[in-house]
Image (tube, rainbow, N blue to C red; front, side, top):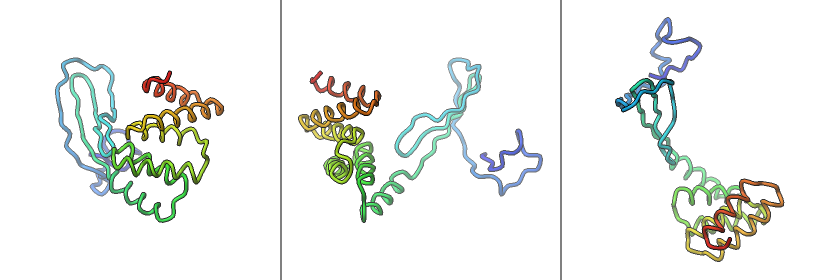
Length: 174
């Protein structure tokens, strides 16, 4: 049970059913080893689900849950596409790419984002390179990654520098 009043320690002195936010049943399994530290973690992350795992001693209680990502994202995308800006096109392209939806549409949107906004935005160029690569447009992927790399170096963003170098190496350029 998940109680929406966390001002107490342990069980409430006076149980109030209206403060129960959620009741769920977890799958309980025995571990083949002992876990000395009490651990709560969210695992098995997916676009629309995950598992809340509670581990202690030789037991794990796993509670799977779902979130309405598809419904929320699609409603947001549809609303935004009625008057989108560069950031909206980028966000929609990113979602479509990550969700492995219509990659041609994602590619169109990422290009629209670059046209409407900063054509040197290394993070948008990076996404364009990944979408192009997934579409089999290797030359366009390499060109976008090289431009993203140059802009990331100029901005001093070492994370994007490394990601672009890794992709270019994977694509046989470096």
